Length: 315
Image 1 (cartoon, one colour):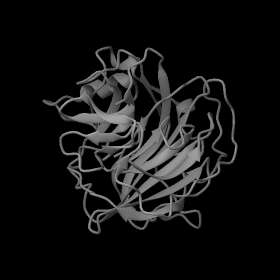
Image 2 (cartoon, one colour; image 1 turned 120 degrees about the vertical axis):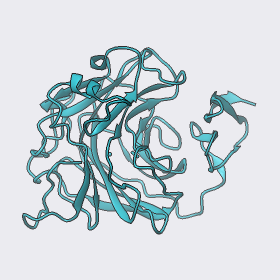
Image 3 (tube, one colour; image 1 turned 90 degrees about the horizontal axis):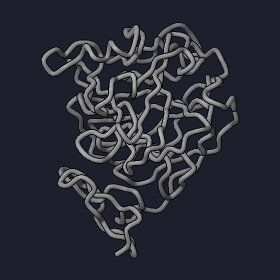
Image 4 (cartoon, one colour; image 1 turned 45 degrees about the horizontal axis):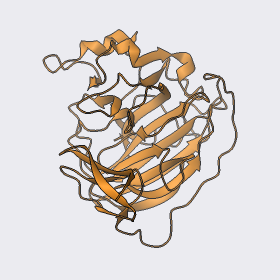
C-alpha cells in the first residue's frame, strides 16, 4: 500500500537489482501546487491527489531537501505529510494520502514496494498508514505503542522503536502469486535486510490503492508531520541499497538530530489468535480479518459501513 523512482544502486556495483515499475519520486514536482494538476478528468502525473482535507494543498503537503533521507542522493526533495483536525476526508478520520497514478500492473508476480520515512520529536502520532488493504506500518497502537509496527491483516508481525530524526527504510516483499507478504528494513543509509519472512495474506491490488501518506483514526487538533522519500515499486530481485549508499541517514528535522541504532522485535512464533488487537480494524466492507475483540472491549463503528475498530470503548 502502502510506497519509486529513486535510482537505487547495488552496493556491490552500478547495476540495478530489479526493474522499477512505478516511480514515486518527488523530483517531477517543482512545488506542491503541481499535485493539484491531477483530477479525475485530468489524470496526469505520477500521483492521484484527492484524499485530504478541505484546505489548500499547502496545508497538507510540503517539499524540501530537508524532508528526504540524505542517503538518497537521487532525489532532490522529500515530502512532508501533515494531518490535523481539518484533514478529514469521507469520515471524521484525519487523512492525507497520495495514490499511484499509473497504467502499470502493480499486483502481479513478486514485487517490492519501497519507501523511507521519518518524523520529528515534536509530534505525537497515532497511525502511519501505507496500505494495500493487507499490509501497513502503524504507530501508537498495541502491542507496542512506542514502536513502528508492521501489521498484516491487522496482526502484529514485526516492530522497531521509533526514534525521532532517524530515517527508516522499508520494502514490502509482496508475492501476489503465492499470496504472501514479507518485510525488508534498514535505517539511515544502510542496505535493506529481510527482517520478517513472508506470511500468508490476501494480496490484491487494482494498482490504485497503495496509500502513500498518513491516517489518524482519532480526530484531534494536534498537527502531525511525517517525512517520506525513496518511494518506488520494483520487480525482483530486490534493490537493497538506499540511494547510492552515501550519507548516514541522519538529518535535522524539527528539533531532533538523532541517529541511534534500532532494535527489532520479531514476530511471535505462535499462531496469532483470531482476536483483533486494540486500535485494529474489526469490521467493514471488504474486511476479512478478525472480528472478535478481547473483553472488556467491543468492535465499534468508526465510519460505517466501511470501517469498524477496536479502541477504548468498553462493553
